[in-house]
Length: 103
Image 1 (cartoon, rainbow, N blue to C red):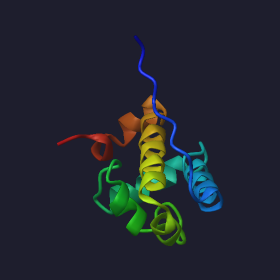
Image 2: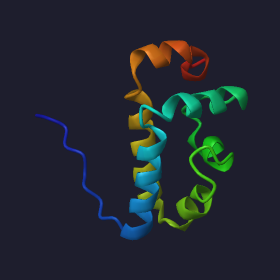
Image 3: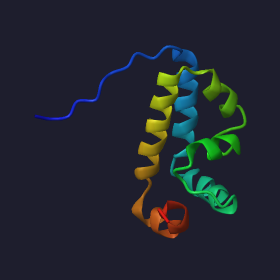
Image 4: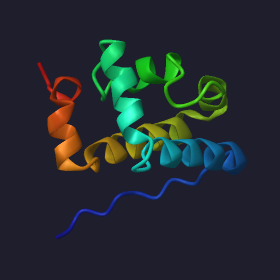
């Protein structure tokens, strides 16, 4: 038996798409290093999504757009963010080990 993730319908597709696009832009090869540097300077861990969002590291307009989403949509955004965090290249993860560490 394999695990199948439940598909939840998106309630605000326009805002959700904008938030997804901002996440995709943040984690492009050309921008992810700068993002990780900002997280390091702020003394945050990369998995502290809400703190990173509040600091504007995902874009200045992102906190308001994220807040406008329903709880289910926000959950999906957090999931996508964490998935992208784990997909960062291993050499970058090693370079920014401090923000990836669980301690």
